[in-house]
Length: 443
Image (cartoon, one colour):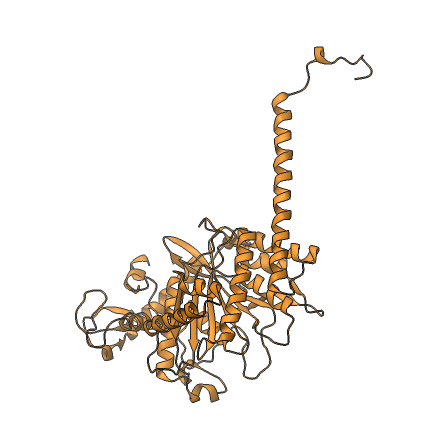
């Protein structure tokens, strides 16, 4: 079986082949991986990524024999990657609501659901990558999440509608609070198994919602993420800059309070790009330079500028999906325009390929397990619930987190004092009888 896996492994993503194709030199790759690789080189100088032989981009031939081999080994591979035995992660296979809004509009964490996702089975002791899509409501975040889900599950049904997280046409918000795909999607990275979770959050840019609810929703989104995809439409406007400014502000406060890096990985994903006919990561780098240049000139939003300049930030441009997809009731990948489908496939492939390297860490870079992350999330939730902190504005939020840190520090100092006193008592031991000066009966 191990030899078969080697034969069915893409040398670009180092994973089992997905939609395998052969090129003129007879080497095989995932269609998405090969297209993504070639998108970074000039159109007239395509070479095989493995042997460097010259080849034509229009000669990617589907390999049906290799596809059949992949299908034979995929099911045993999934069984091996998923936890087994007593206490193993249950086969949930559907979104689980972790954070919901109560009747008063406050956010409630379902600790039982969090335990099932992050603490049970092999996940509790494994590194975790949490991919979260943020941005304005009703901009196709759940659709993108379902496309990621299909790629992580190694599904290739182009004529089937995307399933998973609920998404539908219309203006009403679908996702309420924060949902996580209940079953971990295991990937191999750096010689270890990483549990990847997809996290879907309600759009935070809801003008009808209280600022306090938006900020608290951002807090949970930040805690439940190590890979952020900022989903925007057409261009990066002042509205997106204001939202990102608030989000980074919250991330910095959460990070300082919970010993987490504010932002580990940030993708600026621009949908329905129309300012030029070029798309993808290379063109996105140029647009990101334009955005940062404008922010430098205005000097009004330093937090946004810092986030977009960070090493872990990139920009990717997607075209419009086409009228066939938007008018389709089922909305299958096969209904998409070819350039959109290819760009989307390339982007999703790049996210999946790097997911295992973007695991949740603390500020010192130490990897957090699922159980360790769950403990921090529950700690913050209990603080928010019992102390009734004011989150009505970013300033009030900063004051609340400062009070939270002060209380945590006071408890840590008190615990250290008690531990020291106990240590001194144990070191001194009991008083010898000859030092007891009280008369017998009064001792």
